Image (cartoon, rainbow over all chains, first blue to last red):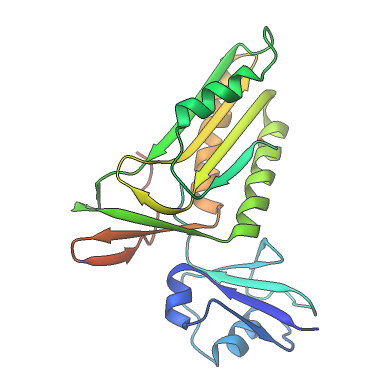
Length: 75
Length: 144
């Protein structure tokens, strides 16, 4: 088992990855550090766990999908 | 569920018309709609084209939840949410919201609420092609 990590829009370009896999993480911010190789967290970042909005300290469990993205601009 | 994400141009007035034809005659007394289209300017600069990226699984789930929440908040007979992704040309429709109810207030209020919720929470991102280069739109305009 593992954790899927996804990046979208400007964050995808900034990190240089659209998706990756990590073995384990305690929280969303921990997943960011592991997936990006310890890159700094951008100031304006939104996160989702298993397709629902979450926060940086949301706990992560095996099999979760974590996503990082900038403020949304649809509509 | 009347939510749809489309990768290709669509005709919002045709969607409204076809959707409304499926509604029971005599029940609906009010319909309200919002259509958002692509401008050729933003932030006082010209824009030639645009690409809309999204987080497919989350967008689909979020729009379905949004429709459900609108039905819980207002006595709606039906509600329709359509959103484009991919390459967008000037004048193309980007988003369509339609709300149908027995009386006008529910349809109008639900429609206004839905577009604001969508703009600030649905995981879509615009990248504009401007004369000086491609740029990610960093935030929504305030709607006024």
